[in-house]
Length: 160
Image (cartoon, rainbow, N blue to C red; front, side, top):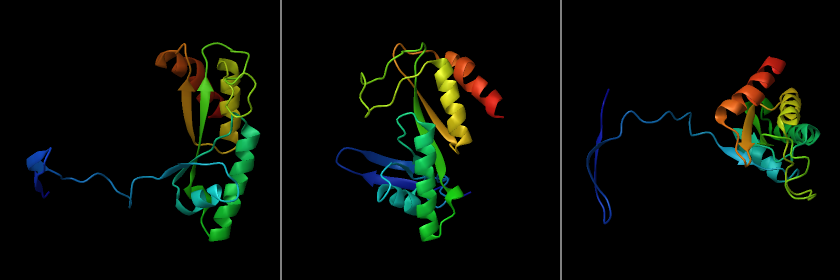
């Protein structure tokens, strides 16, 4: 193994003998994640460049499935295998059923869900092709153990 030491003498920082090997894994680059929902242009950019696509669904598995199909069409148009793009969604999680939307009825923000509704939505998203799920707890924040016990483990058991 070859180690390369770096020498840098800048105005704010100086380095002498900094080891820069082995380099981080690059295949050929870090994964590119693009969050986008615009069907004409934005999803075309996702098809061309993204390794991971984060879909802004506002909490709807049907909307995710629709936008995912549009992304598949863009991939077909440029000759890219759509299975190369990991499908991602973020879901707001409340420790208790909030019984209202985060924006007091606004259609622009995602809906908060309690445990049962979150598990149901995650299961629907997985069935629709989501493979990267981001759980975003909202105040009052549940513990990580609560998220694992109440959300993650039941969803994994339900989806295999």
